[in-house]
Length: 328
Ligand SMILES: Nc1ncnc2c1ncn2[C@@H]1O[C@H](COP(=O)(O)OP(=O)(O)OP(=O)(O)O)[C@@H](O)[C@H]1O
Image (tube, rainbow, N blue to C red):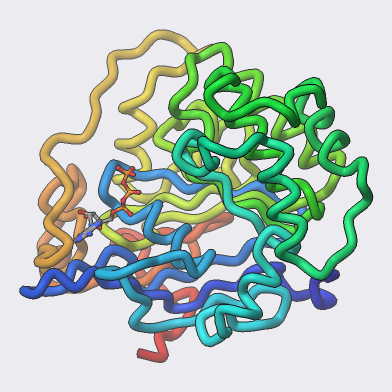
């Protein structure tokens, strides 16, 4: 389905996800806003446990107990997925958006051939797909279609991830959601898969939301960057702008914690301390206990996202009109 004229393909508003732990809920995604336009590659970065995977699962409506969306909306092609019933969601999944997880070994069925799994996915939809499509998508990701007869364990890790991406492309969806799809691969296989994803994206025009720990991957491949900290978006903007001039001290720390591949050798400083417990985050700005630039207001006032030049940053150093007034 084409995206509505002028509208983002995906519009996440005020999205909140809680894990019910029986005690205080863990708020893993806290009032997140995110726009993804057709054909855009959006990277999502942040330390382990900041809510990246939970956000992706919430967007795809794949959360299971004890996690639940407790507020907000996920509007995809003009329809709110949060209130959509499972039947309609199943019709959209694979056809209009697909999800590629960290480990294809877990996502693929070990007792079915790749071809049988492709057929199952096609059969689950009313949409007709040409007989040669499974072979075509395997070729697109650089796998010989002979492997339609192979079982997942007969493929290398890189090939399995490619096969998952091929499956995600069966219906040429408008959006592919990827949760660290290359993290289980060695560096060389990782690079070549990323280059291939990017080429396919240019060729077929789908949008990507891509979660990773790897700042060098996003610096090369994503158009927009979302930096998450403790369940919140703390910075958002064009990847180049964030890399050239991070406006949130956390983004700056994250960049300083990664070696530059091409730039001059500089000592890696990292970020002292560790992320907060999301069941009981610190008052005011969540990053203030670790922030080198914290001042007296930071533990008292919870910052909104503020427009700072080309980017948005959740930091009291940049207080002005918030990007969006909160509705809750
Ligand atoms: N079943 C659960 N019950 C309670 N809390 C949970 C549960 N699963 C995840 N969480 C918490 O939710 C938060 C977000 O987790 P999530 O896996 O989304 O983070 P992440 O940024 O994707 O981490 P990683 O990069 O390690 O995959 C974490 O603080 C985690 O402890």
